[in-house]
Length: 87
Image 1 (cartoon, rainbow, N blue to C red):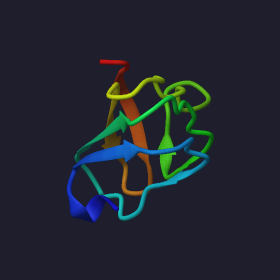
Image 2 (image 1 turned 180 degrees about the vertical axis):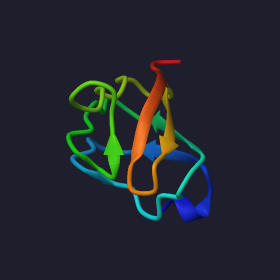
Image 3 (image 1 turned 60 degrees about the vertical axis):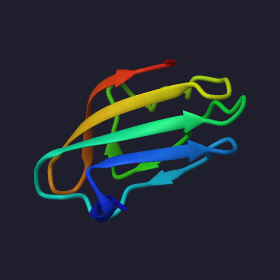
């Protein structure tokens, strides 16, 4: 829920089979940080997000590894602008 802040830290505790983004603002930048707590790797579908390419990238597998995605908002969706994986 983006109404809780434009920078969200999400701890991944299992394989992610879906992700829904709520309350997308009309404009601005949103940063999503996925912090992996184990060997989890998937984000299969992402409602409210338009990733670069055809699908979200697989999460980097390994405890403590972080993937960071930056998006701009169009009022309906988050549009991916950059990603930093596995740090």
